[in-house]
Length: 141
Length: 141
DNA sequence: ATATCAGATTAGATTCATTCTAAATTATTC
DNA sequence: GAATAATTTAGAATGAATCTAATCTGATAT
Ligand SMILES: [Mn+2]
Ligand SMILES: [Mn+2]
Ligand SMILES: [Zn+2]
Ligand SMILES: [Zn+2]
Image 1 (cartoon, helix red, strand yellow):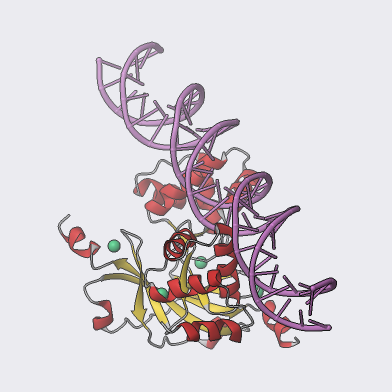
Image 2 (cartoon, chains in turn blue, brown, purple, red):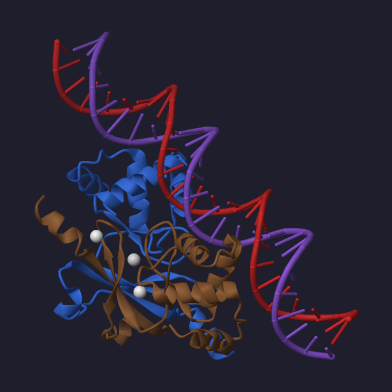
């Protein structure tokens, strides 16, 4: 939303606020679609036609490293990205593959004997099933 | 384990039990490592050197469709596979990327207002952090 | 201001995973 | 045992991501 806010979050992490980097961040924050790198490249150049494919990939890598963006774990081919705003879980549609946000709620940890000596940082849930668009179609088949 | 069991699970799903298909299934059932297609191809040909890359991919596709194998959702480049034995969750190491099984336990569903009209089929948890090997190293840095 | 330097960007080549193609092989049905 | 369907195969093609090496930008030092 706020341009100055984006600028500060970048510089707070030691990343220069270049037009290309800013554009990737802004695009991701406006989107709730979990776009692929190709879609981000396309979207960014639609707004301000000045970013190469390599730069888009470089910036996505840097933003993920800085913890401002996350790569969503899905089975498909191309990686999908998500600006780390509010914490949330994900829903993936069996039929159309759409990735949607699900409001965050706390997941109970596994029994400590299943964790063993591992150090747990986070628990993310992936829900699967049929999205709002696909659910009705399925009922009629 | 049981050769006849594998044969039956294949034929029960309408898949012929060919040597190549059998080998993929057997390899996955013995492994707890979530191998990539390339690793499966390599492993299968080590046991019985008679399967092409294309066939390995074809069979993985068929086995996933038949519901006997699942593709694990991870961020990496290559897809990772898992014979669907007992239900379980997954742990992914931040440092080495290893994917490990976590004993199954029931995850509470999200509030029905967050689900909306979606049809929920399953809830899979992905835990992240440091695996048993990587955890000590991290402590000393 | 000018030189120096690190960080970023770029086009294009390269790598790597996966899918496709079309022909050959194998099993099943008639 | 001919006809049919499913499967396998090598190699080509595609697509995503990374790498390379040259250039550009903007900050800092002189
Ligand atoms: Mn999301
Ligand atoms: Mn597993
Ligand atoms: Zn859908
Ligand atoms: Zn590890």
